[in-house]
Image (cartoon, rainbow, N blue to C red; front, side, top):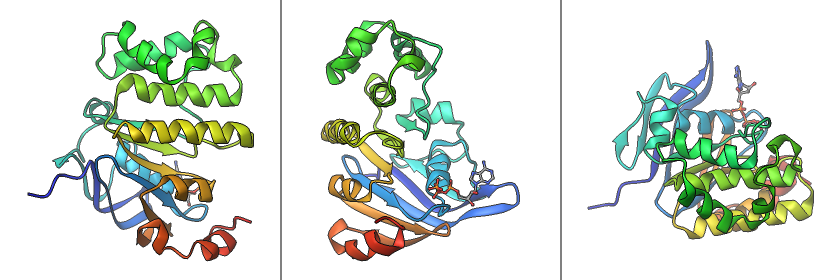
Length: 238
Ligand code: ATP
């Protein structure tokens, strides 16, 4: 038998109100695989992650997690099934402390909010330890992003969706973020990443899906992609 995909979007149509953004979109992420979802502004990358996470409800098609149809399930039910979305803008609570953010997330996904999950997160992100009682809003941009990634460790998810996690961060911090992503990937979790740093994303990814105007225009290995053309023109990256 063929092992179930970790995450599968099967012929999904989705949008906002009467606006269709995704058209007949199919993509698969296998357990342990890192898939980079790339495309120009407005192509529908964020909408794809939202359809997977359940914050956008498809008008057609199916979303499956480990073979189970989760299309009718609300976002928190999908989270309990092992899916974690790290949204653009990080999705952390700025007025809560680092400790409270990590506990809250643990409880939100059905944990007991106690020590073990927190320890796991701090093992992976030791810089957060000395800042546990600081308000998240007072952390630097890089530290806030580390906190957002630490959430993923707390939850021990099986599928992580990442939306432009390096947005607005200094190059040195971006390197640290990608190191953290590499460590996350090495835990065997499946990852679907949207990234403006195309070269780094392709370096991390096993597989690439290119989107244009809500439809898939490439679905294959990074090496099969004309990367120079991609970098030079298609994405508008210098
Ligand atoms: P970007 O890199 O600019 O974030 P993207 O590929 O992530 O682009 P989406 O954010 O998915 O693209 O947007 C796809 C289309 O959907 C765009 O035309 C956008 O204006 C529209 N859109 C996105 N969010 C909403 C919303 N909440 N309500 C209405 N339209 C939206």
